Image (cartoon, rainbow, N blue to C red; front, side, top):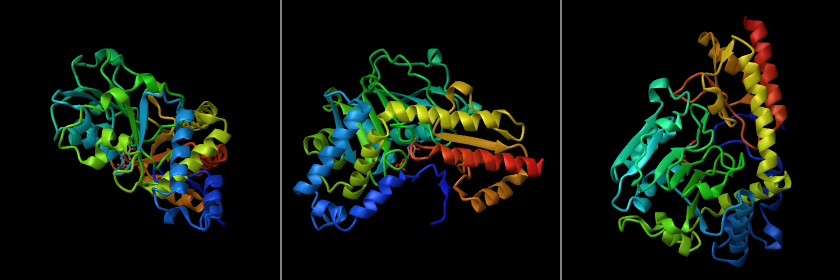
Length: 359
Ligand SMILES: Cc1ncc(COP(=O)(O)O)c(C=O)c1O
C-alpha cells in the first residue's frame, strides 16, 4: 500500500492500529458473528460498546460525575441551533467571534434569540483571540459561546476568559483530546467527531447536569439534551459504527498514555512546523504566537503563484490534502493526534526542498 500522510482538516487521519482493528473485527465482532454495523443498538453487544466508549472518554478527559455525555448526530452545525434552543430560556447569550466557525455559530444561533457579540477578530482576519479584558461580557447572559480552536484560520485559545459564573459553551470540534482541559470550567463542550475522535456522523456533547432543564419546548427530541441524557442517547438510532470507531480511538489514546502524553507529542509536532515556517521568508503563518493552533497550521507561500506547484509536488510525495480552507487560501496542515511525528518531518523536509528549488 502506498505510504501517504493525510493532512486533511476533517474527516481526517485515524490511528492506523484503529483501522487495522476495525478491519479485523469487521465481519465478526468478538465472536458475535455480526459486524458492529449489523447490531441492534439496543442489544447487549452494542450497549456494551457504548458504555465502554463513554467510560473511556470520561477517563481520558476526567469528566466529573455531574456531567452527561451525549452521542448525537447532525454535527457541530446542528448544535449551533440546538445550543440556544437548549439553553437560552428567554435570556440572551454572549458569543465571541474568533474565526469562521464561531462566526457561523453566531449566524445560526441568531435565529433563536438575542445574541451579543462580545469580541471579534474579524477585522484582523482572524489572526488572534481578542484580549479577554476587552470582552464586553453580560453577567446575566444565559451562556458564553466560544470556539476554542478555529479550524480554518488555525487560532487556538490560550486559557479562558473569566465569565463570572456564566456557563461557557465551547466548540472543541478540532482540538478535543489534544490537550489537557479542566471540564469543570465549562458548562457545555461539544464537537463533531471527524478529527480527533473518529468518523463523521457523530457529535459529542458534554453537558453539566444543572443546564438540562432550560430547553425550549420547540427543541426537537433528538436534540433535546435532557431527553437524550435520560435515554442514553437513544431517542433515535445513534451512529453505531461511528461510536464503535470512537471507542477504538479512545482505547488507542489510553494505550498511548492518555491526553497528557499526546499533548506533549502535539507540542513537539507543532513546534517543528512553526519553527521552520518562522525560519524562512519563503513561507509565513500570520497567527499571533500565543494563539497558534497545535492542530491546524495554515501557511502561505510568499509567492502565491507557486501554490499549485507546491500542492502538486506534495501530492507526488504522498503529502495529501494540504490546500488551505477556501475562505482562507494558502495551505493548511492539520496535524491531529493520529498524525505521527514522521508525517510532520516529511512535510518540513518537502517544504525545505521546495524552497530550495524555487528561490
Ligand atoms: C471548529 C468547528 N466547528 C464546527 C464545524 C462543523 O462541524 P460539522 O460539519 O460536524 O457540523 C467544524 C468542521 O470542520 C469545525 O472545525
